[in-house]
Image 1 (tube, rainbow, N blue to C red):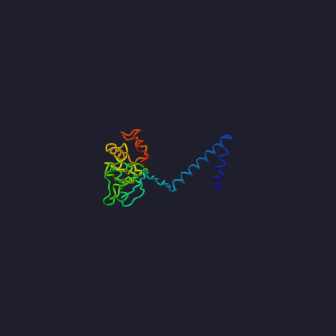
Image 2: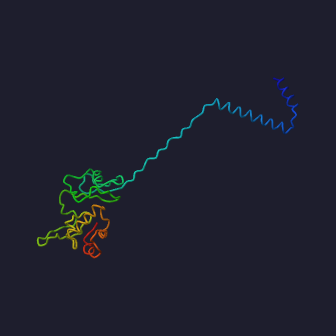
Image 3: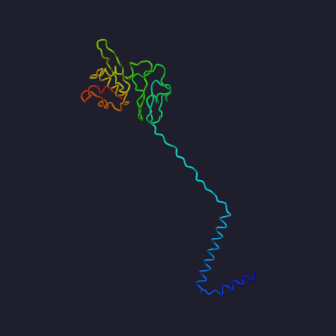
Length: 208
C-alpha cells in the first residue's frame, strides 16, 4: 500500500503540468469518481414509483324545485332534474289521490323552477278558484262574491267575470297549461284578446 502511494507521489511530481493544470486534473478526477459512485448507488437502489391518486369530480345535475300541492299523496316541495315534466312532479309526490281532477292540467308541460303544481281535490270542483261562487237562476253566468285564484280557477269560473266569455276563458286556461302558473294578475295581458281596457274590468276580482 505504501509503495503504491509512493509511486503515485513520484508520478504526480514528474507530470509536466503547471499548477493550474494539475488542479483542473484533480477536479476532473473528482467529478469522474463522484459520477461513477452515483450510478453505482443508483443501480443498486430500488426505484419507488409514486402513483398520484385519481381525482374524480362528481357531475353536478341541474335541478328545479317545485311545490306540489292539493290532491296528491305527499304534498310538499321537491327537487327534480331540469326539464322534468308536470307528471314527474306529481309522481314524486306519490301520485294523485283517487278521483283527483287533472283535466285542466297539461301533464306533459316542462316545469319551471319555483312554480307550484296544484291538483284539484276529488270533490267540490265548483270551488277550485277559492272564491265563493253563487249561481242565480235569473242569470246564465255565475256571480262571484270573492276574488278568484287565477291559477286555480276553471274556465266556468273565469266566465263569471265581466268581459270574459267562453272563448277568452278557454284562452286563459290554455295559456296557463302551456306556460305554467301566472306570476302576477297583470300577466293576463299576455293572453291574446285581453287588452288594457278589458283587463281593467276584472283585475280587482282576481288574485294569483
